[in-house]
Image (cartoon, rainbow, N blue to C red):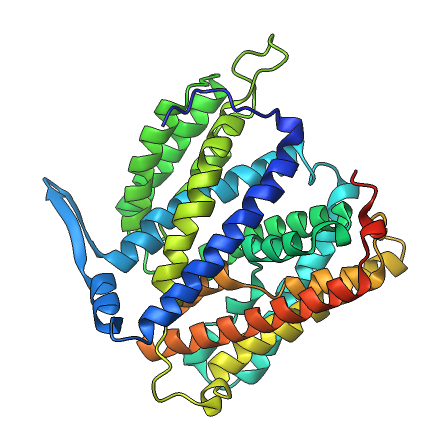
Length: 406
């Protein structure tokens, strides 16, 4: 992959490309999750679970890496996903939809409510059980690929301003999830590995400050950074976020009007592989759950019930309720050409928490039964949010509503 190639689109048109690619990624992710469920409940189930538990790795001198296939996916491939998330957050804050207080107010307040209320609902349902309380953050995240995939099915019935609102909210959601993972889902720390990771991160910042614009040094150091973060006890995927924050946003040729920064180049190079390969592989590996012996009573257990209600009820109440209060108090304004009912429909779609929710669930629990319970709750809450959100937006939206296409 040539990371120095100039992307075919200018950064100013990146949002439209982002929306299109994320929608396509959402469809592929839906298919991967469906296939995983079918396989996990078919005669091929033993082979599926055995492959995920197969250990792969190598041992070269002092470097020992041997993990299960599932861990390689969750700790390795998903580090690339988090690298892309970090690049998006940095670009949007410094040079995009989250630049400036006025743009960040409404999605920021809505994101806060959309994380707080689902967590509160989960805690209330699991109160008194320390073991299951560890999953309080599972329903707090929004899956932007799934949500934008649903919006794409509605076409021009949804105003572009609401699509931008959802994108900004989901990016802030991801930022919140990253902070939660760093603070609450960190294992016992290895001081030496953590010190080495800190030294490498300092080197990356020095490269940035020195004006180094070639991506190769950043990526090579970033790979070593990932190894030490993995060994430090901090979740390895956070190395991707840390690396992203050091990638320069300055153009490689500042005197050239069409120049692109290393950040734009890397972000463009990663979007398709992440959306169409890495996230679907994660979905296929993590969505598979056997329904053998399960009934409706399984959903009534504290973990799946807390996750499902947190996603379906907590997200819509938190996002729409906090956004409504911000608009009515004059702190923010309703997105252009959008109605409150359409805002409510988008708030429902925020309850699709598939990728990040499953990821946090795998960090919160080590017991396979609890992980399966998490999957049931995530699938149920996400499906309900997607179906009801789609129906609400389809019922209240008309093509004239979105004719502005800003």
